[in-house]
Structures are given as structure tokens and as C-alpha cells.
Length: 65
Image (cartoon, rainbow, N blue to C red):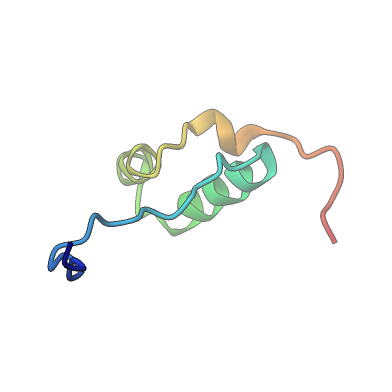
């Protein structure tokens, strides 16, 4: 049996992703809101990132430092 050459089109391996915790979603939503030109753009950007407006309203229990 001949050894096989590697495929020219190997199946891509996607990076393992983790669901961000509430603190990360909070910070991301706040960053988007501060950079958006208006409420409509903010809503579009949040939706594109899989975030909800409520994610930016979370009151963090304690600061991460």
C-alpha cells in the first residue's frame, strides 16, 4: 500500500470559541455604544456581534483588576 500525500484542500480547523461571560459582554456592549454614531448604528453593531442592548446595562458586581 502506497503512502497517501496530504490533501491539497485540508478540512479547516476552526478555533475553539467560548461563550463570553457577562463581564466581557458588558464591556463589549459599552465599547460599541461609545463608538456608534447613533442608536440605530449601535443596535446594528450589537446584533452583528451577537450582543443585546441589555448586555450593556449589567451592573458588574466587582471590578476586574
